[in-house]
Image 1 (cartoon, rainbow, N blue to C red):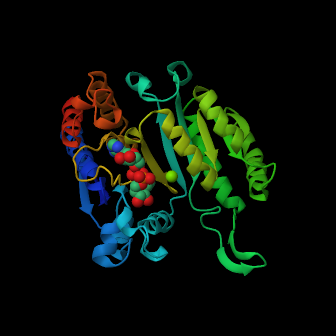
Image 2 (image 1 turned 30 degrees about the vertical axis):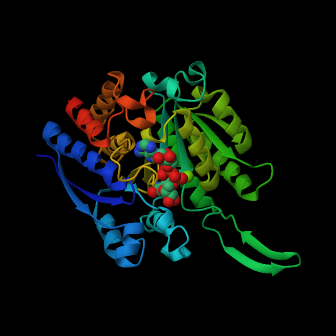
Image 3 (image 1 turned 90 degrees about the vertical axis):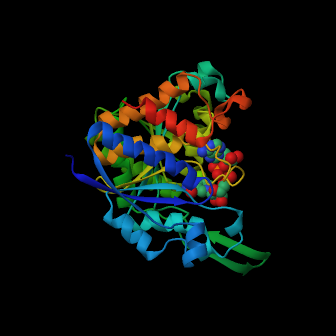
Length: 358
Ligand code: NAI
Ligand code: MG
């Protein structure tokens, strides 16, 4: 019997609970197939926590996460809470949980599934062979810098501050080098060193530690150029590492290479093996409650959890292969279907993937 692994599950809002339910079936199936043992807990987070507890990140939810080996998160947010003050917004909970759990990097694979090449707006020949990972710094930069509003000479002024210290840069860059070492050994460090001081510190730091990873081929790419190259030559990238805001934007761009946001998994990691795993997409209020959401992003996030936190590589591959088989057999949810009339619902897609796991 394998060691019991604790997984804190926070389903959240909108389609969050719908897709998380399918991922839980995958966890169950992995227990049966591989003899693993998962102890799961369910906690409130995001909009539903605001409604029931008056805060997006209740103390008991954070406690459950801290006691767990990994967290599986659905999605949070929705129009209902959009006009709330900052401390009562679901997004504040997301920023808060990452900070409180010491998660300093966000990892997003963008992999082309051959049978879905036509789902992308890019030409199949441009996409061919694309298999990249964006490693985004999560706890620093302009999103966390001091903000202020003031009355200036020409009316209202607003200030956002971007701060990075050398340790913050070093730990994420090291993580990216290590990930690159396990892959095709190419690292693109993305910055705006021609104008930003934080970017100059970033680049200096990358150059200082690069000699410790002589097997990794390093390139520096300016962020605007990277935005272009991702569309021109996506398959030439292996690992991309960048600061918080650039990574937010570039990882969404990389996500769109694959055609559907419903397919994209992510991990947020700190020191050690602890990680928070979630689909890239949001709570999709436009389709919530209809049972049509694509659960694959969340299911693939479980595969990432198995690989990165638990080291259950065989089980990770079992999930990824099952997803590929189900797609190859022509099964599609509405977001990736060309013939929408034949689209499967969330539960049907989940069941097919569970049945295909071996
Ligand atoms: P979204 O990702 O929720 O939806 C964008 C579009 O993609 C929608 O048309 C939606 O129907 C579709 N979509 C998303 N996931 C899908 C899936 N699994 N299957 C099929 N279609 C899917 O982004 P949006 O609309 O900008 O944000 C909606 C809410 O979610 C907002 O409140 C936003 O703040 C929140 N959000 C939360 C995130 C999180 O929890 N990490 C991330 C992004 C947004
Ligand atoms: Mg984003």
